[in-house]
Length: 219
Image (cartoon, rainbow, N blue to C red; front, side, top):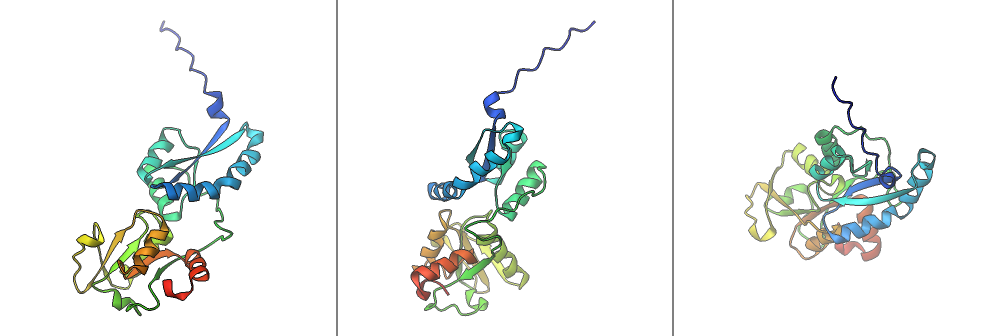
């Protein structure tokens, strides 16, 4: 007869009692922002899941949807918290469950994406962006990239990605875009400094920006 299989090694009790929440961040400032957002969320999750043996919840960071999908497949992550576009990518790559929670952000349940310019600048309509550059936060953001790009394409504009503003070669009938790969403040700074003719951001962020700086830095 075949030997009996060896018993499985016991699961790590500390890991079993810890809910691991993951999100995507690629710079220290973004991690700092998301740390602040999670201050109330993590204790809330731990408390609600206490009857199921969870004693604590922690936040971990990965750098891309592909890395997030790998962590999910390996069992390193229990939940991931991301915007719709990034969540869609992770779901397709990992086979993870569909969205189960809708988390409010900065007291907002829903917010959208906008293109903004300097009020004193030369951009007054979308056609004025032809031959110019648009700055986006990063290529997995819903409200700071995906929504704006989709709307421009739907309206018939040709978008061309460039590696950096310095390397930009944009045709007169094209709209160039690049990723700031930093905090969303960097997108705003590039528009204010004239590096980009327009920027992509969430409407809630622009509302806060206008309230703080006035109309000169957004239009």
